[in-house]
Image (tube, rainbow, N blue to C red; front, side):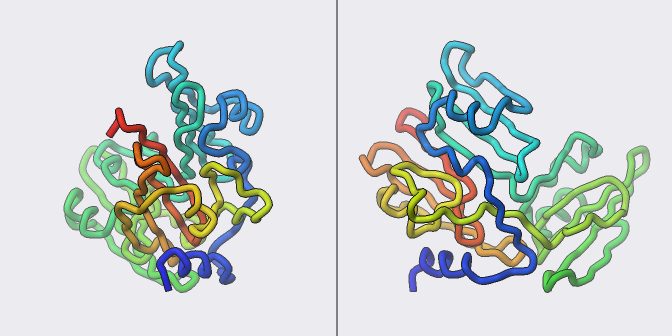
Length: 245
């Protein structure tokens, strides 16, 4: 059985820790216009020009969506959409904690921060959870939370967050709703006809869900496309034109 078919089947299996949600971002696709993005998602929380106000290149953040959503426009058309399925907000963290990113592995954390001042472990929904607390003179203490050895949260203090083993993912697209361009919520089988040959593929697990980060050639063979599948559905894609490679 191929990895793509295995991922597609896994998406159909019930899981107490995964919530499937009908995200508005699923109504967009690669090539959607800036007007389409505004119609579907409204005004962004933050908009950043990437190439000047007349270029149509911008990064848009929608922090108020059910799953934090990022959109990149190139020449006023969607070139990338990414769901922050696991997100660490650095704004309230001390500078030392900001180097820790979501999905970093345990050895990476200790390599950057050293041995924690306190280390607690327990099981939640079948996931091995670890809380490493770091205390240094002159800065507030903070905790790094890992699920199955991978960072899923960083926050001030020692309070345990709710639902640390759970995750929200987009509901899988129906066959009738699959367009001719990449979109959020596609299974690997649905996405395959929209992509060229695969170049590379990396597999791991996040909160018990299979993750595939794959790079493909575009169908015309010129640029590259990266797609992330989590729990059997696409949660991010980026179109890389030849001049950016």
